[in-house]
Length: 354
Length: 251
Image (cartoon, helix red, strand yellow):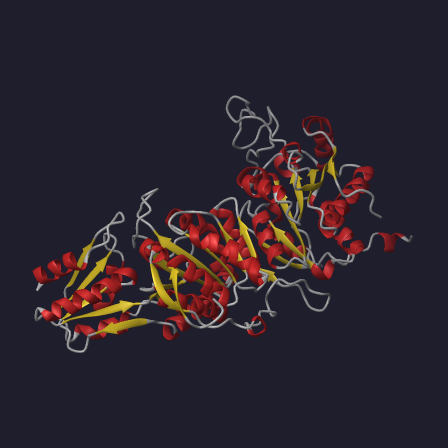
């Protein structure tokens, strides 16, 4: 896969190859269905590019290994599925607090608890509202296709480095397991990756004061200052980093809102609704944090109502309500436990609402 | 050697004052680690990983790059650093609650992988920073704030013997248990520390030195009484000596 040509790949492997091309040479992981193929891909692939793969003893250890590796300023990632990402929250909170760049992939499966291994979107709250302790944010991307997953994986490493923030790719088992043709970009030159020598742990070489990477200060005033600085950065990210797709929204009276796999499915629902004379369009948030509140809120003028569809009991719908701010009704339809709503059932629900 | 020369602070210690209680062993062990780093001339490439506990600020006391890990996870954080940057020298400094309770999985697997890191394990049989609760290494019968009637084997189980467990793992290149209550012990401990770093520097495997340590504040004893209590009680439970040595003679 050296050339920038379209190749048929599996979702998990597409993300792995994209990470390698983004300059990621470090992967720590722990097997869990339905994403173990990504772990296996990195075990195979990284040695080919002089990278390092390590299977850890637990997801708790993984997230702390990521903390350590990211402290050196090098590009590092892991991938897991829902129960595993819950275990990683300790490290995620420390990483966010210490402002370390790295990339997490959560191939979401049905929950709570052991749940099952089928696709779900029930980890949206955990991803976007802070899964661990403390006031922090991750940049969260929800790709709808493998091509988009590849592009967002590369973007994830870039924004992680730009802002010193952990970035989460929130996908689901459907995207992870499907095969699609994908065009990979060329390999990043490792020598052109962002320079972190002003803060990273590299050893002082007896030429500078020691660098200290922590999320820690016992002095409340100093800790608040650290938190304020981090939140100032979050404000910039909210301003600069929102991503979304607008599909047939110009004249839309029904605004379907969905992300990831569901975002893709509801586009065909909008198409069929239009054939039936209902002016439907789709607003698909791509960055789930920062969430495009204002951009979605603009459609309150023309839309009769908003219709959110998720593979959950309704999580993103709370952000949709914040965006709509009571100006129009916000309806919801969801299936859970690994059941993926079909275009037919979403359309039926939509026609009921119309 | 003149007294002033012999006892000047090692270069690898920062000038920050220790936050430790009088009579606590952390100070001696910190100094020994810094002396070893100086003598091995590795200060410029050393990265330390501090734990959660009384030594949570240890990364400020050493004049090297450093970080502080989540409770018990120092071996995982050190693994991440070392794998990302194998040319650096990486060490963790951990207490008994950190290493032998919440961080049991991390230390066992780091040791078993033969991770090229060095761990200094402070065993004082009690949780210091949180105020004197039972540690996994608390002795039977020992009163702590969470074992007010003394540790009972049928309720809390037995003190865990970390060195005896780790010595069975093939990835371990150097492993010793020591104390710092007498000058001879201090000299011996420094020798062990150096070997534990050589295990890493010579790419042999994982190195760990367990130091039986005092906690006068939470033991409710004076510093002198604490040293005696350690000699009389802890040494019986936790036999001293070298458990693994694949490093051989290094000078």
